[in-house]
Amino acid sequence: MSSLGDSYGTSAYMLFYERRVKKDLKILVSPEKMQETSKKGVKVHHDVEKDEHYEMRPYRSAADGELANDIYKKVAEDNSKFTFESDIYSTEFFDFIMRILKSVADGDVDDEAKLQGLQVGAKVGFEILARMLVNPGIERLSQVMMDILASNPNLSKGFLARMCEFPESEVLWEVLFDCNDKSTQKDLARIVKFALTQLKEIEKDLALAGETDSVITTFTDADGVEQTATEERPKAVCLRFMAHMVEQLSDRAPKNWRKFDAFLEIFFSFMVHSTDDIRMERTDFDNTSDAYKIGVELYYTNNMIKHLGDFVLQESSPYHEVGR
Image (cartoon, rainbow, N blue to C red):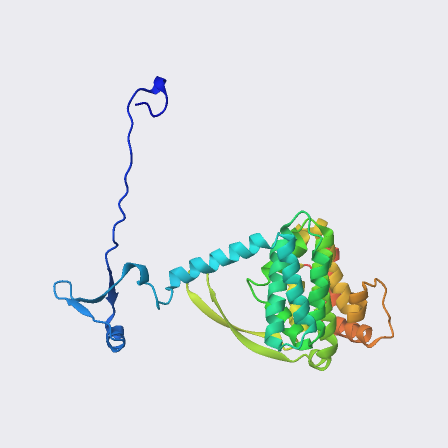
């Protein structure tokens, strides 16, 4: 008999598979859980030679009722993140996310739900869409995030406060300095500008008073020894964020001067624009408005002109430090 034709010879074979019954699994029981396990009516065995307690479970149901360990949780979290980041490139999935964010912006939901909506929006915009060569949905995303921020100024505080902390802030700086798409930079910077212009009016008294908080930070020195330091930071979140903007002028901004237009526009909008100006994408401003007057006063009281002038003049600046 030939199985594959005459040229391959005359041998043939058949395979038979046997379904084997799975053996029960031996599940170790820690000393802390022995009493709890026994109360459930489960028989706990003791291996005298190995001095360990265990129970026997059917193979198919061995994991029922068990909580995932830390390693499994981390793997599941990474898989979920990868799935989300892959699916967001689908038009249908992106539209689905946009509908959720829109319902968060317009619906009667608590601030916690809105803050989570902002975090999802920031994830989609700053970490995923900003890396795409073609991202027509970025403008829609920035608009719905501004709608969420407009519903409660405290949301702007939470959003910008996160952008003042590493590593959360890194995604923002990557967009403002590394992104090659200027329209993407512009749309995502609008979200930041909206939050800033909203907070400069809400936090006006706090900001103009120059009130600060003492914060203890932990760091590792050059010898690898952990150290602590106390630093003063503005209570007003808008000023705290602008202080981080100023920090970028010393190193990161000069290295990326070809792509930092949106970064510099944040400085400008903080001084002269209102939230309505940002929404309507106005380039001009009303120098009689409260937003303009507050912004200009904050600029002078916080030496913004000095910082920006120093940046523009570089080595010719009277504030230039040797070796910088």
